[in-house]
Image 1 (cartoon, rainbow, N blue to C red):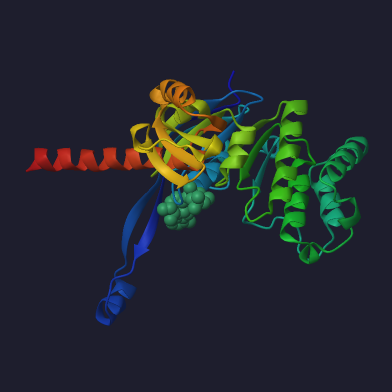
Image 2 (cartoon, rainbow, N blue to C red):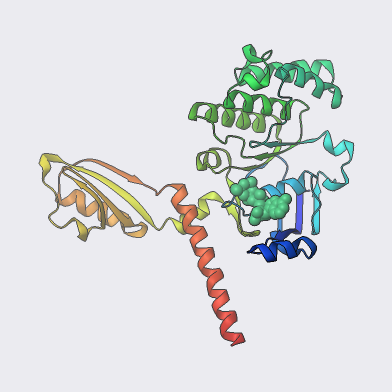
Length: 340
Ligand SMILES: Nc1ncnc2c1ncn2[C@@H]1O[C@H](COP(=O)(O)OP(=O)(O)OP(=O)(O)O)[C@@H](O)[C@H]1O
Ligand SMILES: [Mg+2]
């Protein structure tokens, strides 16, 4: 039985359209015009217990809106959701005790209180037993190395320190399902790695189910095998991150260093030259031609260093979005042709 079921979920926001010009503005005070924004436009997926799934998409794609519906903060326009058997927007207390939502862009801790005070309040709100609280609190503060910051008002903490406290607050009641909306936004590399490590450990030890958004592909690569990719409110991919890489990473980068500076005279015959700084050469080569290209180069030249790299995951994902955008504009052309 899947932990999270989402069926044909929609969310439309009604937004006020401001007309241009003073006369029109005055008129709009009495006659407001609205347009509908389809923030989430019919998505369906399932997540099994213990899975850690990445939720990717460009700005405005509908990720936060989806997570808010899964957490019961907002009602959907239509569609159904079940998380651990609960309908989130019914806001049952039993549901609240078993999931957590962490939003990297939002403060959830009391600004003027030390984190420890907030944690104690959480303990009361969620009826966490003394022993459990002590154990989880101890483990998390140690893992995230914040033991010496617990009694400082949250407003005095750095962004990264605050985010660690937010994460602890989200995990204190041992939720079975975690929604994380950009938990590492704005953090330095060390703090990001820390948080990532904590999530990984937490997921492995407790088999919690995690749905995570991040614009940092390192997070997704490190944590998630499976990704949901959303664009303009629609799912454009649900599957292994590896599959996207294979489908859209059509080329590899070949970095070579030649001994004695003797280099190919016409390197472009081997692939697209992206850098040429003797004795180094970087080529972009179609995936299927890599083996043949490498053996040819090694046969004919003295190569003393070689590296074969995949393009960055950022490039791969933007290739995916470009393709869906092109498909969408093709659809428009088809529709126009049919109408005209
Ligand atoms: N409260 C709201 N009222 C009206 N429109 C909204 C509201 N919240 C979001 N939207 C719109 O819905 C769409 C989806 O927004 P959402 O915040 O879900 O995107 P996102 O995928 O989380 O983007 P980002 O990566 O920038 O965080 C956007 O077009 C946004 O402008
Ligand atoms: Mg968002």
